[in-house]
Length: 367
Ligand SMILES: Cc1cc2nc3c(=O)[nH]c(=O)nc-3n(C[C@H](O)[C@H](O)[C@H](O)COP(=O)(O)O)c2cc1C
Ligand SMILES: Nc1ncnc2c1ncn2[C@@H]1O[C@H](COP(=O)(O)OP(=O)(O)O)[C@@H](O)[C@H]1O
Image (cartoon, rainbow, N blue to C red; front, top):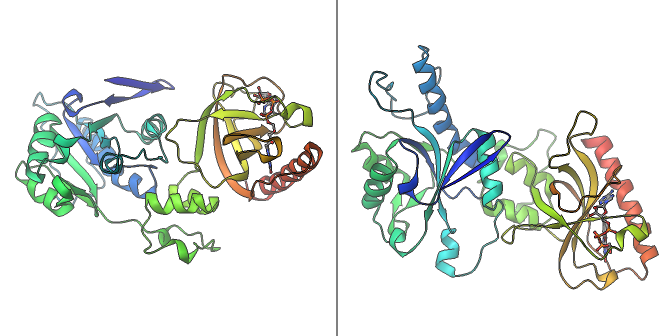
């Protein structure tokens, strides 16, 4: 079991259900992206943890989103408070079935950090293998949820499927869990029309077969470079987190040093090209240094300098010190233009100057 911790609080990461801290209040799903829909599924297990703490303090809960009445725990019993727990599959089931590595919106470390910020206490990674994928819905509930996780409460999205050949539905889970007196909240699908701002940044109709907020819709908006839309669907900016590694040391010669980022191998990259970004340098925020630093980023092969591989590089505004070895958390704000092959470094320099001016204008008017 790992304990990933930042800023003092931590999330327990259990690499198998039998290693989990119990009892649990569980949100079940893949949760790649931890987007607005996922956040809604996670919410009830957080509320139950808070509600139980309130009962302990002698208060009555204000809201109960569960379709089942949740009974107050017996405070005289030795039973402990349920740990708010996200249960997910690792590797991603699609990776298991296709044998192809799948790029993720939120690789493990990033997912852990997002769950921590939502107030989740534990992440359980169920190894998605032959054995797990062969469990019937009944066996999954009995073996994993009841025996190993000692679930007291479960939350899933309306379209959740589980068990062998995905034959169990959210409703099946509800009736199977009822046999063990475990209440199951089925969270309605969140739609992007709920999220559109009134001044109408509408989604490209070609992108949307239906209006469900989904990981695949967010991947499509990122592939299209529609960052405002990706960020609305995520409920936060899409982020690239990586360590600064050395590059060709050409950037400084044209007046635009760029921090080259090493990202997790399974990180999903948006459309190649140039972006306006806001950056957090981990460990650098002080009372005198602003938390967020504005800048520009390029994702691409750098044809002008005969680059051989895709690089992700960030130039920070108003910054001059060394960043090698530091971790940058880069939030995408807007796609500016595709990458081009320039006839000279001077032509590239002049274009980057224009990119900076466009980005500064976006920050001035929109951020
Ligand atoms: C805002 C920005 C835009 C860029 N646009 C392009 C581009 O259109 N074509 C290209 O070949 N390289 C582009 N680059 C990448 C540069 O070629 C690269 O930063 C430069 O070669 C320095 O690389 P180094 O960090 O390895 O020294 C861009 C870089 C930045 C920061
Ligand atoms: N404003 C800045 N933005 C990005 N990196 C900067 C900046 N100022 C200084 N640096 C430092 O310079 C390095 C980038 O310079 P560059 O010549 O492009 O070298 P490299 O090819 O190794 O990335 C960064 O990794 C960082 O340590």
